[in-house]
Image (cartoon, helix red, strand yellow):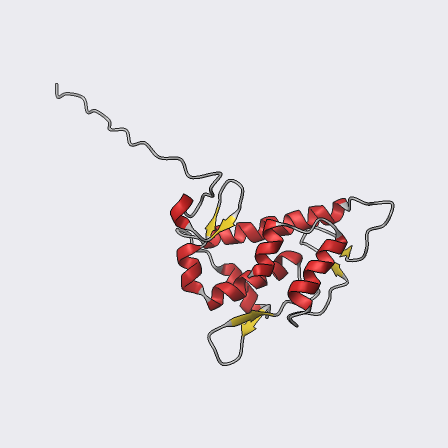
Length: 180
């Protein structure tokens, strides 16, 4: 889960940073081989190598990471009540991006290097949600304004964050017209 939250909260802004994220959170634990490139649904492949001197800002990679992050957060927002759309969990299971971890009720991610970047990150969330479904059903919060993830609905509700707390609703009683 830490890997997925790290990706969402502090998205890698360079190929070297994304390669380091993969190495630390996915390759070292043995969940997937080191990818040579990444892609998202709309994009061409972006190589995970040190940036070229001619293109220090890596705009393609930033766009790709931003799109992957948005897709992940949109899937998590849809997962929350009242919709509780958990199709991304079913998709992760059917595509083999998660699997049961031994004899327990725990799941582990097993994405492939050729998967979309968003599907790789979603596999991390899916493994944790499948392992601890009741916790996520009760505590997962995604701010509808900034899409920040939190696990404390008592401070700002399920759809807010400390900076974007849901505004209080005011009930207005409508007066009925007096009978004629």
